[in-house]
Image (cartoon, rainbow, N blue to C red):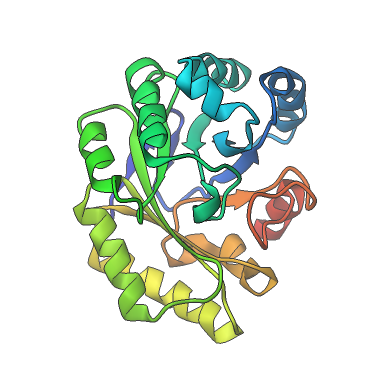
Length: 256
């Protein structure tokens, strides 16, 4: 069965041969970016996720149209690495409170002035303006990652399958789900669902699913076997951006 493959910068997603590791990069100030990036480069990740929501002056920089200058600094620090840009609000499990209008302004600044620096842009699918943002991204060089998170449980298969298909319909390059398991059966159920939907949607979209928490660690290690096109890690076990993330060195060893 022929599955979708997509080359972004120096990674071909969905080729089945490689399982890229994305390292979450969470500087609190613009001044921290360059010194902090040295340690991250030494870890040799395949991808960097810049979590903008950890930037203490994110809202002010967005209002003053200074955000893209920070993005350019991040790109200069990781010139050859696939860069995923994410702003996760507190309502979405992230680190910043930002009104919908300012969030939209932030995304438009990235698309208008930071397009060359951005490879992938993550947008929470539950946002009311998600579909509109997807239209803005259509035809752009920036790939859209639609995300669905549930930090309390793993919804029923029918719900998760519909979420993935809706993300595809609305224009996602990568449809991503991260849910919290209450048992090992939940983890197994998510992995099997990923494989089934990946086969059904072959040629249409790339998938990435995570079972969070300590129970879900196996999904971060073996996700490729079930159709996930990349996985996440922290720089160390103490610098993570989601429950259950492990340090990149440990994850590389476990994948091997």
